[in-house]
Structures are given as C-alpha cells and as structure tokens.
Length: 634
Image 1 (cartoon, rainbow, N blue to C red):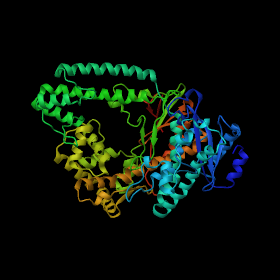
Image 2: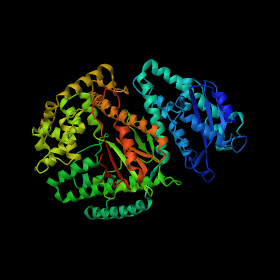
Image 3: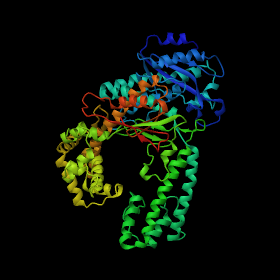
Image 4: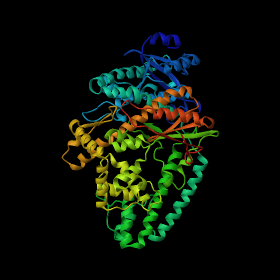
C-alpha cells in the first residue's frame, strides 16, 4: 500500500487495529550489530496494519527497491493514528514501536494493547505465568495459533529489510504477518482473560500496555553521562585498588587473590595455612567467602587471631572498589551508545513476580547510595547544559500500602496526620512517648530509630527474631541478642494490633486459594504454601504477605506513569529517563522546574483507586547531576 487513502480505505471504521514497524540501520551504521533496533541508528522502513484477522497491509516507507509511500504524508497519518483515543492500537512489544515513534516526535496514546505483556499475564501451566523468553511472536504463533512464521533471517537472507524489494510477495507477507498475528493474539488472550482472569485483562489494557509505551519513551531519551568524569574516576579506582592489593600482599605474601578475593588460593590460605574455621557454607557445602562470611571471619579473628583483623577490613574495601569499577564504570562504559553518548538501559515491567520493574544493560536501578559511594557514581549522570535532572519519589509507599491493608488505626492515623512512622514504631517497640522517640539529643535516639526503620521495612512480610538479628547486624551495624529481637517483635505485634490479624488472615487465604494478589488483581500463584517442607512453606507465606504490598505499590506507580504518559504530548520538553524502585526521573529545561514538579506530583499523588484512603506523598528533588540533587519544598 503506497497511499494514505489506501490505508484509510483498508482500516475503515475499525476500532481495534494492530500495527508493526520494520526497521533498518541508517547508512553510517549498516555493519553494526543490532543497529536496526536502536532509534538513534535506525529508521522505519515500513509499517504493517491489520484491522481484521487473517488480513493485513504492508506500507513501504523507505525501501531501496520499489515504490514507497510519501513519507511526509505517511508520518502525519501515523501521528494521528497513534494518538487516536477511539482506536485500540495493538502491537507485539509495543515498547519498541514506542521508541521508534518517539524518535519521530510521536507519543503513542492509549488505548493501547501490548500482546507481549498479555502473554506474560497468562498462564503457561497450572501455577506459572509465561516468562518473557516464552513470549516471542513466532513462538506464540506456533504454540497458540498453530502456525509457523518464517524467521527474519530466512526472509532477508542476511540483508537489511530496506534492501528487500518493497512490492515483493515475501516482503509484504512477512511485514503484514506480524500485525495480523498480533491482532489474532489480542483476541486469543482476551478470550482467555475473560474466561479465567478478567482482572488481568484490565491490568494489561489499562496499566501494563501504557506503561510499555512509557518505557519505550524512556529508552529513547536515554541517560546522559559525564564520560570525562567517569574516565577520571576509573583511573582513581584503579590506583586505589592497586594500593589495597599491595597492602593485602604485605599481610599475606604472594597469594593470588584474584579480582574479588575469592580464589582457591585465598581460601587455602585462610582455612589451611591460617586454620580459620568455616563459618558459612555455599549451597554446595563449600566454604563461603561472601561478604557475610568475611564479616563473621573478621569477628572470629578479633577474639582468636587479632593480627588478621586488618586483612578482612582490606578485603571488604577491595571488593567495594572492585564492584564500583566493574559494575558502575566499566559496566556503564560498555553500554554507552556510540551515537547519543548516553545509556539506554532495557527496563522490563513484568520480569518480577510482584510486578515491580527491573533493569539491565546496564542495571541503573542498583546505583549505590551516597553513604556507600566513595567515587560518586550518581554524579556520572549529568543533565545537558541549561537543564536539570528531576526526580519524584513516593515516600514510604510500601509502608502506606501495608497500613492500608492491615487497617491498623495507629498506623493509619500516623499517615493521615502527616506523622513520623519511624517515631511511631520506636514508641511501639520500646514503650516510650512520642516526644522521647523524636528527641534527637537522647543517647539512644540513633540506635532506636535505626532499629525502628529496619523493623518497619520488614513489618508486613513476617519478621522472625533470627532474621531481624541478622538484618540489624549486617545491614545496620547494630548488635542485638536473640531475646532482644524477640522482645522487639512481640512489642511490635502488641502495639500494631491490626498487623498480626492481617498477616494470619492473608496467609490463611493464600493457603486456601494457592495464590496471593494485589488490590487490583495481579495474581501470584503459591502452590508451596501447602508444602510439608517448612522451608518451602515459610517462603511461600512470606510471598503471600509480600505480594499484596509490594505488588500494589508497583501498580500504584504504574498508574501514575499512565497519567504522566497522557500529558507528554503537551509537554514535549519533559523527558522521562529512569525508573528506580518508587522513583521517576526526568530531564527538564531549568526554567520549567515548578511546572514539571506540579504536573508529575499531581499524577503521582492522585488517589490510585477508590478504596485507597491514605495520602500518597511524592517528594521532589532536582540538580544538575544525579548525585547532587536537592530536595524541593512543596
């Protein structure tokens, strides 16, 4: 099809239309691997549409052989089509289509439907949802529709798609098939949802598919990097690691410690030459040398071999520097885009059991916090001249969701009045007044508040005394006996009376149903909750408590993302770049700060669903780089 009128004639008045882009690398990047998937190095070669099953058209846009549609006319049509509020736009992996459309200045608008999201929200067995690697279009066409599709390599014979003749039968068939099969999957999945899990259909249509559009926008924008600072810090890191390596050599001699102090030679030195006890083992019953094992060995040496205590401190320091260099310097540089000089990580909305997003290539969600970041990794992310990095972060969203679920009056009142939940928990577990809990001049203030914070973040997931003891020791540096931890948990349950009731009811309900779910109906199956093995059952029970809270918090964030997405066409200056846990990050012109904060905050703090009766708070911070963000007052 080479005319816009021809496209319109085919689509008619259809309200559900599938589409699919074919792409090819730009001329300077023809020989580069996967360049056709990068909006910065590729262009749209053609677009397929399907308005009814087993039919479709292919529109050549930039083929080197054959007739193409007028590009200006086509992209004007495409912009109108992708923004049309009366047409459900269906695509398989719509995040990719979103990134390519956004490169042309088009923000795809709901209603939309991502069949790859739908695939991951349907069951592949009695208790397991499909994984991403089981959700490819060709795989699903064979499994669910009983038809095999030719691969890209079979169709192109090693050529780029724009090198195929535009009007060739195989070119048209391959291009149109992707749209047709996406439409068929739309009906197949919705039939399954309507029969088995109607609430998952709502989630796919109203939450996951628009979120996928937003992820495509983020990937296109990318994360701006201060490469010169990164190279400078790389040199500093290498010098520091060499210094520590020499100090370790001075202590233990010519023992090969490797890149992470976990070599067989180092183990032999510790457990054979020095006769240290094995205090922790791996799953294969080998002597462990992870960070916890190092802490335990260091503590043992304080009493039995004090001359070795400095070694364990050096090992911990060496490892910390090694991780910073391999993960945040070399790791980031490896994925720096050659054209944009930015990072364009893959962010997945459905790769965790609770619905939280995760990130890879590189993982930009695990940057160290300032307290554990000697070289300032977050400073690598720097706004362009005249711009700011802006982040808005949900304040204590999981605790708020937990309070909403367990309906504990003390917790709910704390949030309704803008109180301090950590102070409230300090009161509960130590039996002190609110005034005492918030008195920063008391000698025990810091320790009590640290314990309260760590208790809060595990409150709803089923705290055990031993687990609390280990968390306080290894994450917070606070030593408490087992009886003290038992007392803390007992006081917590007595003070927050709604907590234990909710926990027991939730575990019992999951045991009856064999699943747990979020408030909006995102389901997680837990067959092991009836297991006779304590370990399996205990883990399933923790998942039963974790899923409603962490999953509902993730759903609330995605609902906010959908609202932001709808506002992007009128705010072309607002550039989403990252999602980190409960935080959304943007690049904005410096002069748009107040406007941006007001818009994003309104989207995040809006009541997520009618039953949610606690306030949501989005805290804003901004700065020229990600490591020097200053909190903004409301």
